[in-house]
Length: 514
Image (cartoon, rainbow, N blue to C red; front, side):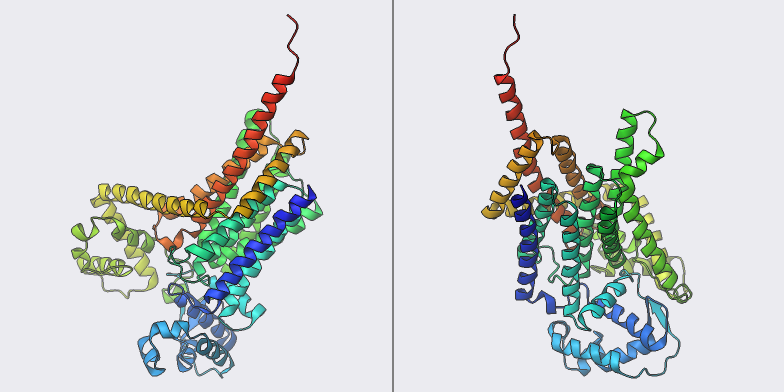
């Protein structure tokens, strides 16, 4: 039994190592992604603003912006022309960017006119915290982002393995996640339009091992102990880092809350008088992780620069702009609404809609980030009220797109399933079956855990479906869906073995005397 556990843990380590190495061979560690360089530059500007001008967190000062432009650490047309680079050349020239980053932090600060802006709106300002941690651990360079992501992923996975070293089904579930992650990193990043593993949109993946950790603590009813608490607190901090840098990661908190709620409902149906103490003993791990996230949110709010609101900028990611962006994904957009938006595409559709709204209502106030979000909410609600059937059709098309994408990924994964991992899974299934017969494991725990993982994949996908179905937002749901199918196959083997075992026992049992 211990040998199987060791093999499963080794497979987790190996799969993460393969994904890490493949990314380096592909150059992911040195590449600033096309859809993430703005967030990276904002994070650096925020760090310089704190260090050179003594601001609070999550703001970018005009002085820091000037320092960055002076060394070529800016992607505006004038700076690119001054340094003789196109945007693609600038993004791929890691040596130039690293030298510019070091130069920006080492230069003396020029005078500052007091102007600043928040680093949120189109991104999560907390990404600055992830960049700061990466720079502190691995130095001020582009590669630090990649190294920090994998370091956090590895730590989280090892904390899980240390907690569930004797739970073969739990470790196989983590191995299934690692296999799906490795498959995505090695084959499907381009299909997800992520281009590079350095994309900030991948950081929400860090929440998945934490969610699995809490799920199995609840499923198996682990009590509080020094070991369980000490292994779980770092997981809570990792989830906090992931959610701070990428707010979509907080879907894991919703999943944990639903899991705890489901336990309470089921328990109350069995025991009419369920005491508060009983609820705590089963759901303490979920409360602890949610508490860690709440603590992180509080620290972020307290340390944010107090002047953000007064500048009309935002600290948090916009909500209504992604919703409006999604409207153009309807197949009839060009026919019905493209002309009203002056033929704009991408983010430009929202800008065009807001300008139309301001002109129609004779609004001439400054178009700040806060005002832009407010007007976007107004035009989105107007759009839905004026053409609700369009919205219903859009969500249907969104669902079909997500289904087809997931189906394609699953078919590709199963067609290319590594036979070694399949063999290891079969051995682990037999081992779990033996544990069930010896009453060291229970089939109902395996069943409910496998079902919960499938639900989590739907929950992660549902969050994207409700906002905007963009390919590079689907990484979480795709990886979870692949993990869920691997675990479902594992459950089928185990459940089949249990059924066959019961049938054999019934056949061998002597018939009752007539």
